[in-house]
Length: 136
Image 1 (cartoon, rainbow, N blue to C red):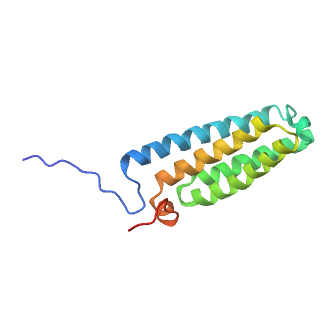
Image 2 (cartoon, helix red, strand yellow):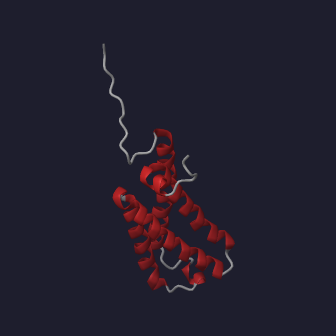
Image 3 (cartoon, rainbow, N blue to C red):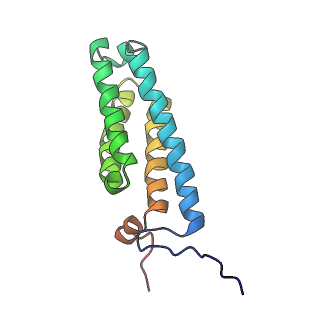
């Protein structure tokens, strides 16, 4: 008789399918943020003048964004990173709305939803803390 190795889930691990969906959602958000941060570092003056930011501040904003993202990418600090990124995106939405750019305001909202949705599906502790429905 052959014994097969089975996957034993830990208490903090999500079920397999939702976990993979969470990984995909998080990866999409993280990749878009990495590209955005690198773009800000490479071309700091593009687009920020319209928002009212001096070009000298753009690299600092990019470093803050990428720093918060790094905190999100560490599993033990992912929830804290998501909170920091939510604050970052709140500022981005406010700035876009201040100039009347509704489409620009939707991008940070979508990325935040992907970040939190992915984290929610990946982390059983977060699902226990914030259940979508009451257990019976």
